[in-house]
Image (cartoon, rainbow, N blue to C red; front, side, top):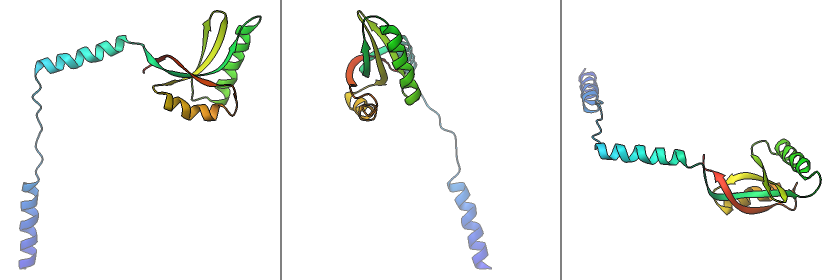
Length: 129
């Protein structure tokens, strides 16, 4: 009987000892304003400096259609990596990926080079989102 009473008392005391309350945060209004400004400023920025992998560049007759074909075939082979068609006179270039560092791009470059042996990493403006 003493064991049962002891267990009952300990379990009752345990419930009171670990009772959950509410947490209240006191944040100064200036901090909230700084956070809102930070978020709004980053929404305005669409692109940052980064890297992409260039898989092809074409110039001359039918260069645009060749570049579009290369982009579409890349999208079929690598559906999770986005491809971009870029025009820098006189070249239509096909670049893929959005990488924040050269090391990130290098990881995918090894896989891409199996299909596109002339692929290489180039600095480019990328979408940060």
